[in-house]
Length: 143
Ligand SMILES: Nc1ncnc2c1ncn2[C@@H]1O[C@H](COP(=O)(O)OP(=O)(O)OP(=O)(O)O)[C@@H](O)[C@H]1O
Ligand SMILES: [Mg+2]
Figure 1 (cartoon, helix red, strand yellow):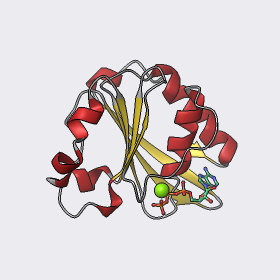
Figure 2 (cartoon, protein in one colour):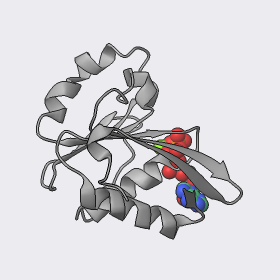
Figure 3 (spheres, helix red, strand yellow):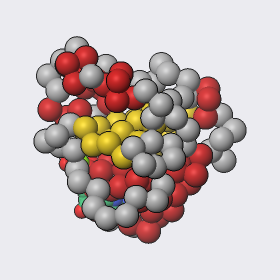
Figure 4 (tube, protein in one colour):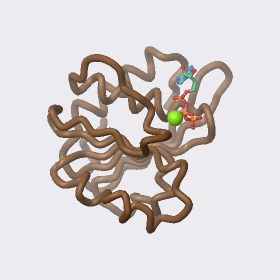
């Protein structure tokens, strides 16, 4: 999918948000500056959050309990081992919520979960490209 500018990113975030359910994971892969946090912010805002959406690079987890579905935005960049997700209490955060995961591979990956929408972002000229791989629960949901 071509995402030539920030407005394309916002539209894509809207489409994901409209279809997001508790238990889902939106796994955002891609190198530094690929647009992971930008797309995550679009989703959080599209779900109705007003105000800032801080990047969880240092806090690792930001929660948005008042949204429908409730949302957890995580950035696993700083994890050194997937086991650290247990120390963070990721499973407790995920209870009844959808998860947006940046650097999902550092948390062991989520692509084996049927509710995982895997998105790999790449720089393409001045814009971005996304490779989208839906888990079984997403088939038919994201046209
Ligand atoms: N589709 C797009 N077209 C043009 N610029 C974009 C697009 N998406 C994001 N950007 C810009 O790219 C820059 C980096 O985006 P962002 O911070 O979201 O990347 P990131 O993948 O989270 O990087 P990091 O891993 O370093 O946190 C920002 O300045 C953002 O505005
Ligand atoms: Mg980021």
